[in-house]
Image (tube, rainbow, N blue to C red):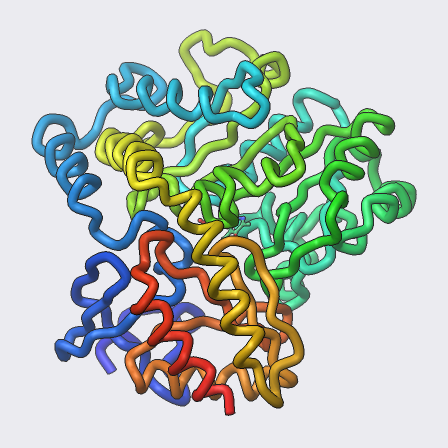
Amino acid sequence: MRLAAVESRNVTCQEPLPPIFWERALASNVWDADGNRFVDLGAGFGVAGVGHAHPRVVEAIAHQLARLPHAMGDVHPAVTKVKLLEALATRFPGGVSARSVLGSSGSDAVEIALKTALLATGRPGIVAFEGAYHGLTFGALEVTSRAFFRRPFASGLTGRGSFARFGDADDAVRAAREAKVPVGAVIVEPIQGRGGERVPPVGFLSRLRAVCDREGWLLIADEVYTGFGRTGRLFACDHEAVVPDLLCVGKALASGMPVAACIGRASLMDAWPPSRGEALHTQTFLGHPPGAAAALATLAVLEEEKLVERAAELGEYALGRLRAAAGAGVRDVRGRGLLLGIECDSPERAARACTRALERGVIVLSSGDDGRVLSITPPLSIERDVLDGALAILMECLQ
Ligand code: PLP
């Protein structure tokens, strides 16, 4: 196969079946290279919140691309970078004054948060949670929990991440006590995404906020997956009115352009020294102009089309439907907004369902440490009848 000849073998899985090769996408639909149409129940890893190739976003990118595809992010930046930073600041939970560092991936956002926490507290230890996924770059891997990702690189990890039970704020204190180094921050996904759509008990996040305040730790909310309406609020923290110290965002922010950010309370972000000509953290594509334009258009579409409210409504409807239809082989149906999970009785059942669904024109991925959860994270704009049809197919494929 052409791909196998040129890509490192750890990347694209080609066994037992080859993947489909995407050729184009629009709204909730994807077409492969052979012209087959699929409904995308994953929104391309949660990126296409406003739908694939939203005309408004495409136009903003095209316009920016024609005028200025690239600037000098931390030296002579593009005007769009400033606009994006302003837009992010006004959306920080609790209306607190905020500043950001931009990146290109969710892992970048997490790296920036971990660096900020170290600068602000002087303490390198981080408490994370079992099941957490914060990315695979070396810093992020310190707080990503799955052994599959960590084991081959264990000798290169510093061990400054320690893990508490997800959903148990007091267990963070136990984890900190057992940590190898003094703890400065806690990092948490308000709802675990790749960990298997795990929704913690009500009150967990506010309890965690209180524990962090008591212990002098920063609270880092990783909303790379849950952010921008996915759970039916702009940020999942908003469900409990919790204001984090640092907020990591990416994925749906720019509808497919690689843009991410660590947004933090302004006073805290001032732990970074002023740039005197050399930025302490930057990258070539920081503030990428077409990416920033895509993000601004995405934020406008989210608001104008009321997609956050839509995610809440449609999510509740889908959850009810899935619960009513769940038969033998389904252990649990859970989620919030349009971040839904169907936990199967075995990883094999989930894998079989993904394959069968693909054959019937529905793209769905599995999540959870052993892959037994089916992730339902469609575009927030998906039409109700399209969602209905795809869920009906999926439930049949589970039998
Ligand atoms: N944090 C969370 C919660 C994620 O779900 C992900 C990716 O799935 C990441 C961080 C890493 O983002 P990226 O893959 O863009 O580096």
